[in-house]
Length: 280
Image (tube, rainbow, N blue to C red):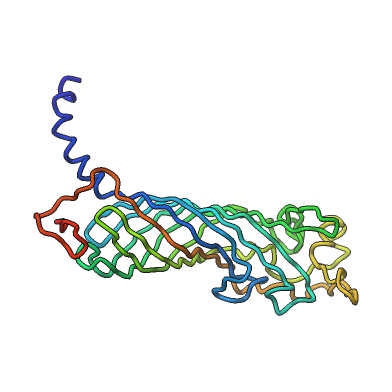
């Protein structure tokens, strides 16, 4: 304990310097998705507000290690954004994501004040698609097995927590040595086709009824709610596109605040932003 007491003053400068390399980030923007109920790769149609917080550690003058937590919402409606309007499906899902990654500034922000940047990482996200029935009740779709999950042709119920690969880029502006503002678009490559509860072919109506119940039949196909009323499709008819996985994305503004003191290590020189130039 005595050794620790006498060594602590020597460790504080190192901890102080590390704190100066850390940024706390807040994010506000939109979340959206691409899938069977939203064919466009990027659109503001049916987008929802998203927010988040994160940390960024400056490894070098242009490279950062990042960690973030974001929340948002995803939705799709055949009546609004699908070529398959007779299917008449719709869904909504909360979205929660935890991400670790690397971020690279193409220019040195301390010297230029403005730079494009790129990022890539790994993430875990949670979703839970639901819909509203004709009586106005909210119904969660995953337990129903609308495509025969749980009994047909080896189809298993999909997991509501999945992995994704985030990547994207943006523009970053240094307001001063401690505050940075950025605009970014970040796409997420997923490994599931069930964010919207739609993936493959219709199961025979009688089989679906016998195994997963009336509610599964009602919400697997909703063309019977249209005028004129449509019949349930034949077994094997296409319901979704299993060859294309779902995507989701965040886009918006982020503000980063340097933690620790309001001065950085440097050689005494000033950058174009008025910041001391870091030496790594």
